[in-house]
Amino acid sequence: MDRDAAKQAAAEAAVQFVKDGMCLGLGSGSTTAYALEFLGRRIQDDDLDVRGVPTSFATERRAREHGIPLTSLDDAPTLDLALDGADEVDGAFRLIKGGGGAHAREKVVAHQAERFVVVVDPTKDVDRLGAQFPVPVEVLPMATTPVMQALEDIGATPTLRTAAAKDGPVVTDQGLWILDAQFPDGIPDAEALDRRLNDRPGVLDHGLFLHMATDVLVGHPDGTVTHRTAL
Image (cartoon, rainbow, N blue to C red):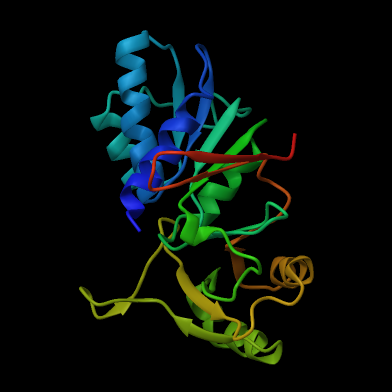
């Protein structure tokens, strides 16, 4: 499968949702990187007047490279549209995100958007969440062991995400650590897990995005795009 072609197809379709005057949420990841490139072209070719709120330092840099004007939630607390990718998405528009570690900021931005468009290739479209990709859980460093024990108690296998280049934990933009919680047979009840993690002291946020996406665009290697919408 030509995953790059599939990602580009989904990203190009997503950018067509952008209208003049919009304030946008700009997500992170490889598929969203293509969306930023296509958005930059539309700004130049169609003279679009838009502003974007980036969800990570990497996204901020890419947006500037493509000539996308930026703002913040301080100046634009309500967004017209958010564009982002996902590590997994199921038929109920539930997502796992956070492979790049930016899920906390991505969730804030997605929550503030009137429309949340998710762009993926077919490998990310799954029947059951968590069967392949772990749930990232962002934690205070001092809470790492207690949160790991709590995850083990509910049947997960948690591991501390590490960076080979620095021989230590991956540190998020918030200065916190990430536990990757793998569920051997997938997540049995995503809503219950969401509530449990939200209530756990020491957890800032996690990679479950439930009942937030309004549109899912699945790009295919032949350039076609499958559009599912909850609107």
